[in-house]
Image (cartoon, rainbow, N blue to C red; front, side, top):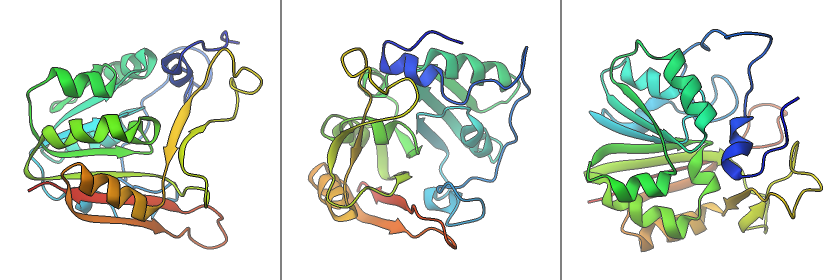
Amino acid sequence: MPRPPLTPAEYWDLYKPHRGEGDQPAPPVGPFEWTQFPGHGPGPELLGTPRTVLELGPGEGTDAVYLARRGAQVTAVDFSAHQIERARRWWADEPGVTFVHADVCEFLVSVATEYDAIYSMWGAVWFTDPDRLLPLVTKRLTAGGVFVFSHAEPTPDVYGPQQMRGKWLEGRERELTVLRWQYAPHMWADLLKRNGFDDVDARILPPPGDEALGTLLVRATVS
């Protein structure tokens, strides 16, 4: 068993570990979905037809590869060294996609590149202070560029930074805290507009069937 993580980056090193011994095969690519339920909700059409794309928190990298195979030049940034090493190994032969090991805010500050689309699918947007992140995203989008992200539906009346619970975290508050930022759709709309976005669509996509948890889905553009 690996040692308990000591930093948020190390915590995400343990996300979706290998199953079994030795190198594991790459996971299947596609479909491209914003929710946790297969076949439920919109797909890549929310991004339009971007030529250049930035993903914040790619994890296994399958969504970045999906877009690259459809002609986009994709950069995918994650601060987990393990996630990036694994994605680079799995997708080394895929043209059009580059995996970068960096904190997303530090990356956005360090580059001058502008992107037609920036997105995060249950990724870094959920785990980064929006007051720090959103001004940086605005600066890195082309005119007319789109910003899309999704994550779990927030708990009603529990907003702002919330301490995560779960494996590796229980009872270790003094050693490691992993935060995620949760807001109602109208709160996200206000945050985005105050940071230079327009044409904001922020909503909760209800879950299918008897599932309990919906998906927060947000799309915004810059002029």
